[in-house]
Length: 435
Image 1: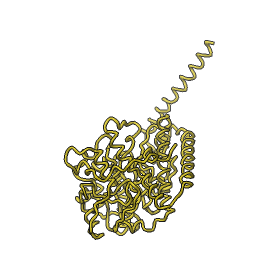
Image 2: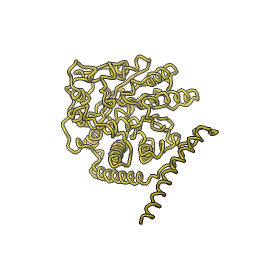
Image 3: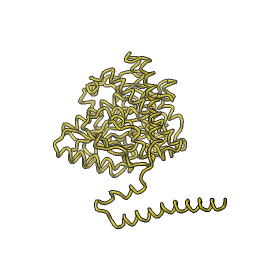
Image 4: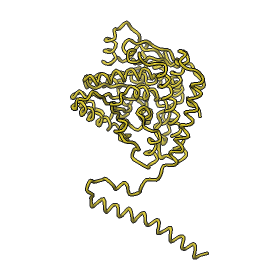
């Protein structure tokens, strides 16, 4: 199985540069495919000072040159490096080896994600939420973290889990239905996946307020999607984090679709501008640019550690696949939209840069291909070897000292399970007598 997308194998000409901005920023009638092309072009360039540029972005500049979305971009879809006085210092010390590491992270994360999707189709998993297309947003932000920082994910942050050292096989236990998460959150400072939309932002805010009171200089990173930004929990977390100056970074992966609802039906303004109403900065970053995501998240985390409060980062990206394996995206979006975004593939983008900079060779890519295949085999074997859970484990630890109602439910469930054994035994006996 290839480690790159179709676009990576057969490069298309970049779709960016002359399109309009997103549906919320253009006149009626602009197609979503044209909006997708907008992030392919360069950010508006001007003779602004670093402080002035940051003010413009964080204060909510809506569009740049030619009506394109105003966003931070350090690497174009063609793999060309874009200089940026504000954010270049945050990646100035990134070595060629670390660049190759970022590429490896994205490739292996995509390979694991593809294997998980296949396992679900084969009946090995009950459900899977793919991250296809969002690798740069997750790897870039994930590699910006320090070990003592804490992460609160949704259910799609497989790349961030990879960065935090969580075994990919452990992510699959919940989707197979054999556990409620498979890893110790305190072992990796990576919380269990959260299925309830948006609730983890409140958990993150409370945790951030706690570490601030403890006097720690670590920070918290909370992930959510564009659809979750409409949840009341997210609004409440923005309020509390701003009032209490909590050291938390809200990282919104705007992948354009909240299941079947497009972003323009979620908000009348760009998502990052919502931070203004709460009194803290918001920045939009090219979510398919791993270097930009790394730099912006580093800046936001360092700001939090200095006691300057929360930041909202909107990673402008695209969900290449279905919302989950139970979804059919062909019913609500067009293929031309995906084609436009394939031209901005995050993995292909970094590969072009590595090759143009002579930071790698074909041997590196061949070894990585073999490593990705080995990862796929290991994941398949691990999933199929997972034991079924204890049927009665659900009743344990519900109450510290036990509860009469739980005891009654356990007894009824035990009788229900025993009924299958009785019916099976009776069937065997009847069969033996008939012969």
